[in-house]
Amino acid sequence: MFCTFPIGPQQRRSECAHSLASVHQHWTQYVEIHHDMNKAYVREKMRMRHLGVVYTDGGLVKGKNIRLGFRRHMDVFRGIPYAHIPGRFEKPKRHPGWDGVLKATDYRNRCIQVNLLMTDTRGSVDCLYLNIWVPHGRSGKD
Image (tube, rainbow, N blue to C red; front, top):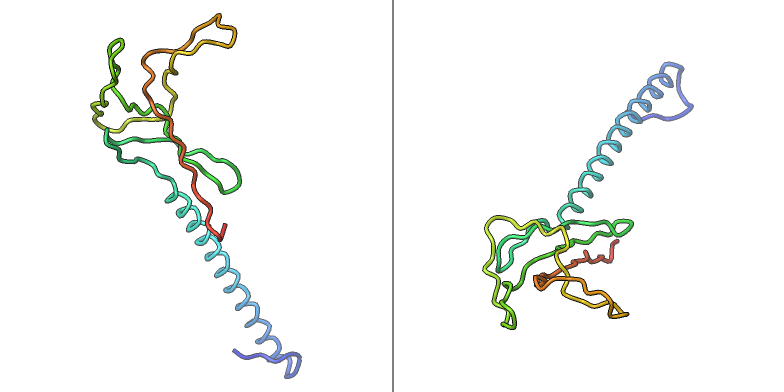
């Protein structure tokens, strides 16, 4: 309905005001619905940016997604075996792989190291694991 203010009889003004109130109400609902849809869309896009479970030569690996700051995330894969534990003084052999999904969320053993004072040795010979960090790049729109 087309309205002109304040010209016209009282009844016309009343109809016009009612019509404008109705348009305002519908517009407000439209904006709220699309705002919620937009937020859901952004959340879905952010979820899609996470790698989740990835395929490697050894099998499937599931990492952990960490938040770096405002709208910045990184996938972290900790303790992925890349070689089989060798015998003493032998070359490492390729890791045979695993069945199912490897949960790569915790660090594994570190290699043997001596502290600066050469008074303490820590670590293990079972240390053939990779830790991988995959930052999510920023697009020009971020």
